[in-house]
Length: 177
Image (cartoon, rainbow, N blue to C red; front, side, top):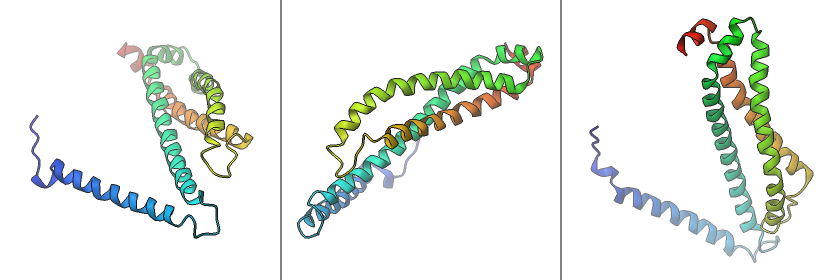
């Protein structure tokens, strides 16, 4: 493979862009921290608001990455079961029943992972309560809302490859093995 690049895209150019962006972010943080004593809010509010926004953005990125990971693993597992799915479909199993079987298997694994993650999440939420100003991070809405969002993302990530596997022609699935 031959890769050619233009001199404008050298690492020095990338480094200068990164330095200018980092400088802008640093100046924004300094500006936010310099207004701490002049506002009617407590001195920690601007910085806490910034950190809470960043934590929310990182949380959304983590949700998307976990959904993509669950999708990838589920698609891989289901692709290994095409022979079994083909046999079930050839023997006359309804598509809805095979889809339900694949969905139950995937959601069982996701439920075990969610249950195992709730215990450390509760401990870390208590730790984060000290970082974010004025927010009760161990409330029931947070501890139930996030697992429900993850379960919804996992359900979608399981349903898509399962639906694709059920639409395969049984003869083609048996022939490929």
